[in-house]
Image (tube, rainbow, N blue to C red; front, top):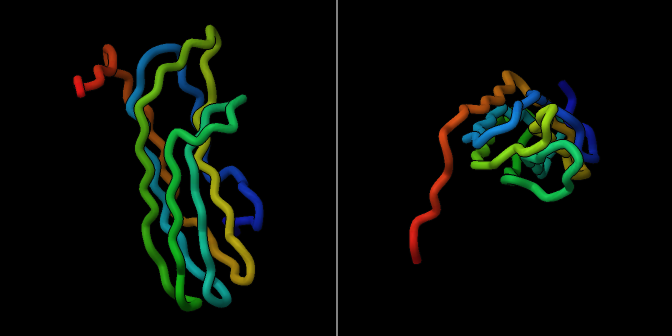
Length: 114
């Protein structure tokens, strides 16, 4: 898939209520010239990123893997979509290959004490 110049969906998964560890990855490849690619994990209805990453592809055939991780609680009765989205920042172009998005349900998430 061609990565658009504004955030576009690369992969999406519907997650039922509960606590989850979310992992996502995709291979990004430059197609024209040097390109900054930004990716993020979000929940449907939220503009706050669960995680985000960016890479610079320095030549047209340069490729790398972008990996994102998050822990989150879904409370909406019908569940929510977790979305992996990316954008290719001008002047270059990029493509996304082999996207993966996984949600592993866990009992709860505990934060360590300071």
